[in-house]
Amino acid sequence: MEESLDSVDEWMAAGGAALLANVPMSPNRLEDLATHAAESTNVAVVDFGCGRGAFAHRVAELAPSISVRGIDISEETIGHASAVATEAGLRHLRFEVADASGWTGPVDTAVCLGSSHAFGATAAMFDRLIELGARQAVVGDGFWHGQPDDWCLENLGEMPRSISELTDSATARGWAVDELDVSTLDEWDAFERHWGEGVRTVGTPGAIAFAQQRAEEYDRYRGVLGFAWLKLRRA
Ligand SMILES: C[S@@+](CC[C@H](N)C(=O)[O-])C[C@H]1O[C@@H](n2cnc3c(N)ncnc32)[C@H](O)[C@@H]1O
Image (cartoon, rainbow, N blue to C red; front, side, top):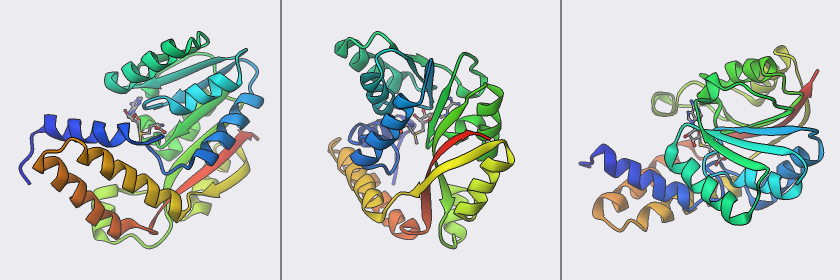
């Protein structure tokens, strides 16, 4: 498939725009995690790598008296998130374009959903959230649920090889795991389907081939790539 980087960016953006969030997360799960963040935060929630901002937005709706911030390196996603927040009149919700790894500021509850790479990797994320002084965290992160083949490792990279390796990494860095869950196959299937539908809305042969390629790739990692959900507090 011949494609320019601009085209790929456009297709990826169209895929992302079709999703509730750019992670395999059902609406019920978003509601549960956002409610947890809203109810247990005194001062500030910061969503690192917030993407288009749906999670931060929901926390802000649920908790009018706390500060909610979303940080992402992408101007495009932050532009969208800021416009939605302004339209909703949520003045305690702010979005900013920044590199999460260098960000400093007040944070009670840190949120990092599919964005640990913004800190380098999973372990570095756990460390950095402690350094920032977060008392609790809501984390969604990948791990190898099954045995990854060479293609998976080459294209999706190294990740914890089991859910216990992921939780051990959190506890070794000073976090206690209050709740743990994994995305269901239904959440994964919906995530991939909606993403593909979004890409196809671009309507060009390149976009349609791109979506088709991802659908074929999904067959390789379906049920092998896992996604864990953790509610964490400082141990
Ligand atoms: C898989 S998406 C998840 C987005 C969002 N958490 C959600 O649930 O929709 C990863 C996000 O991390 C952002 N990102 C990547 N590197 C980053 C960095 N160094 N600092 C801040 N954001 C970063 C990307 O722009 C992207 O929006």
